[in-house]
Image 1 (spheres, one colour):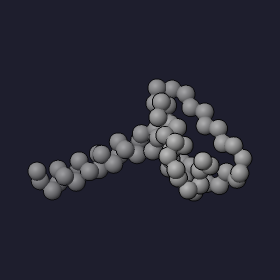
Image 2 (cartoon, one colour):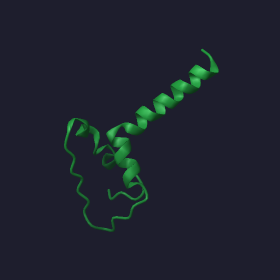
Image 3 (cartoon, rainbow, N blue to C red):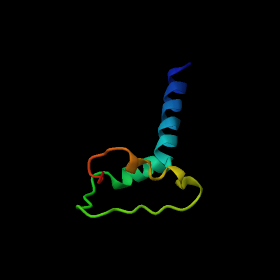
Length: 64
C-alpha cells in the first residue's frame, strides 16, 4: 500500500472516529467543570445509543 493511501486511510478513520456520538460528547465535555452537582445527559435520535459512553468511562472532569 502506498504512503498516500495509508495517509488517506488514517485521515478517513480519524474523521469517522471523531464523528461518533460518544467521541463527540467526550470532546464537547472535556475540560469542563460541572462542580459537585449531578449532570444529566439527554440525547435523542439514531446516533444516541452510545452518547453516554463517556459517562461510563472514568475521565477527569466527569463526576463518577
